Length: 285
Image (tube, rainbow, N blue to C red; front, top):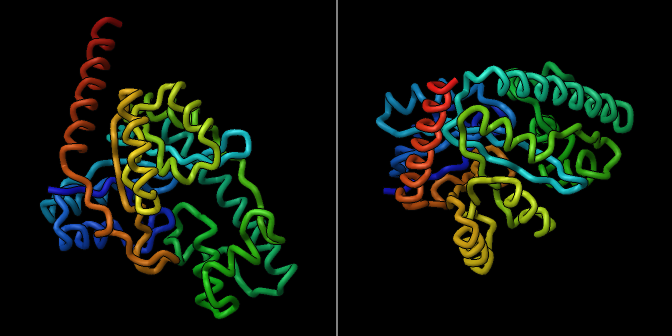
């Protein structure tokens, strides 16, 4: 039995609908998956429904894009209460800020390069869900303005490029806090992509509960190092492909990470402890 605990749908920047993602995972022999869209939980209900229909276990999750000083950090949240009001309020705020950012980038692309694109076209691509730069890249390549995703980012909307607009990202500490308030399990996503190891240690010391050790872009040496780091700090171990579907720049990554189900079982045991402590707290209040 194997799982993939890091997947995206059309509700953020993936190209698979929740239903198609579940069907593909089932087809590839997975026993369970986690849906972890960027800064949104909008696709969770459909994912859970599709999971029940296809007899595939689906873990409700989220991936927060955060910033610590100038270092990008992604924080995964597993088994979140996706109806938690504080979580929903924060995600609504992030969604609004994302939209404003995309509007500014569209304006710059029109002004600087005379690209005839609109927010309405972007909304059609992302089904009016959480907006991201990947949707701009998809539209520009679809309309023939740019040949590849890489060129879109390298020349136009990547960090430091003429049409790039920065985001007011939350800190990883804020993400950890809100995940815990929603009775979820916070995990550092792909630590090998974080530029500064000191940042990883800082987040561990703050109170993260897990580390995404098994990741497609981690080297064997990194995997061993992060396994040891997780063990030394009594952290849960997770893993996933970070698949955004076949229409994105990396292509289909689902099927390339097959994490043993026992790691999910450990996550579940930790979730039981969280829920039990929460129940005891409610009784004592």
